[in-house]
Length: 288
Image (tube, rainbow, N blue to C red; front, side, top):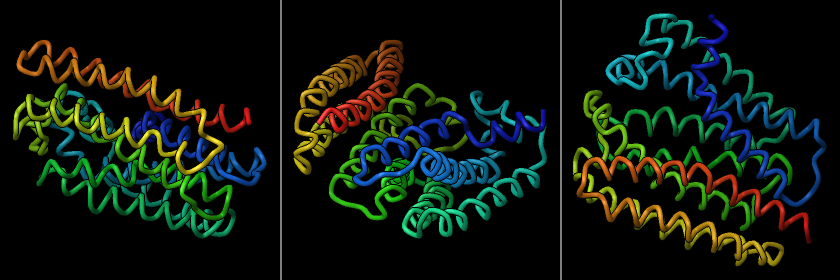
């Protein structure tokens, strides 16, 4: 049970996204990396992000106790002491960051430290002060593909930064949709989210606008690298589907039940969109 609770503290869904996006960064980067080296780097990158997730759980366990979707987590449910969570989170970071420096490279470790510190010391405290926290939280969330790229190539180029921009923009409408679905939970916990401050209609319009921005930046890989020119067709089609769901969310924002339904549908469409977009990039790279 203790092992299961420790694993839950790392937020496995978040870790799964990190594994996927960092591995995608490695596959898309120039140069070569062996499977063993790539797996080792991915493990350490995941440990850094998991450390941030555990320490975030430690810092917010009283807040989590006020929300229906988080109150059963190990700390708010009382299954684990906050001290154990603190030491587990610290241990993950003091193991993974130095190992990234000495067994991968300094740039990957530096990016990991930026992701870890921004998530804990900027995004986490901002959540109770301003809805703009979502924009700050997008930065650490978008760094894993850069870390994967740096682990393979030893540096960053325009293509690497295009991945960062895509993932950074993707997170904003993705989280705004979550904030509509769980707006009552966030209200109870005192987390500042746009639906509770400006209303669902304004939030839905922001989802639509940022989805169009995501649609635009999704073409960046085709502009910065001729290798990915053909990928733009996939970006065109996938972006159109996502834009449709965002438009439906916006069109039904004045109806409470329908806004919940379409926000949830949009949320799941973003979950499908991101891996499909990255898979298309990888497929076009290796088909050339």
